[in-house]
Length: 151
Image (tube, rainbow, N blue to C red; front, top):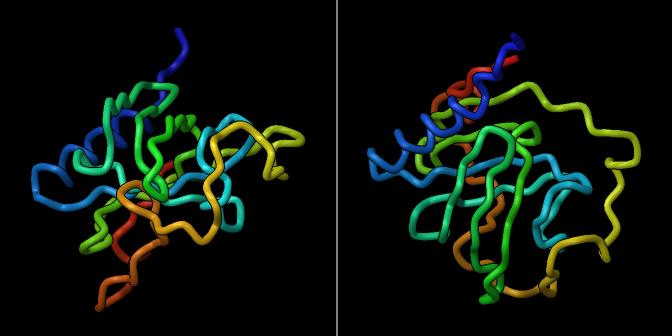
């Protein structure tokens, strides 16, 4: 019997903890060809998504994929993220959460074309609920001081 990864369970647990504490869960994701996100919000091959109940609709956090609808620049879009591409989940307000060993991207997945899968929004459009740049690290040690790397 093959061992099931703990990663999706840990992601769901940190998400639930954030919501229960009234905090905003952010998901940092390495973007590749299997990741369905608006490409104009991808920076350096990564996107940070607000996955709070206020920012998402129909959030499904499965063992292989995280999927939901969110608004980017006022436009509702379907988002789909492979769990193995999640590099961290943390609370926006205090940086508490968990970091994960980055997944090795499949050959050819590292480069992203602007015309790839995912509805694109103009780069100057205001971001509403779902996408965001990472928050300033909390005082007293920074974001990394609160994250634990899980392999």
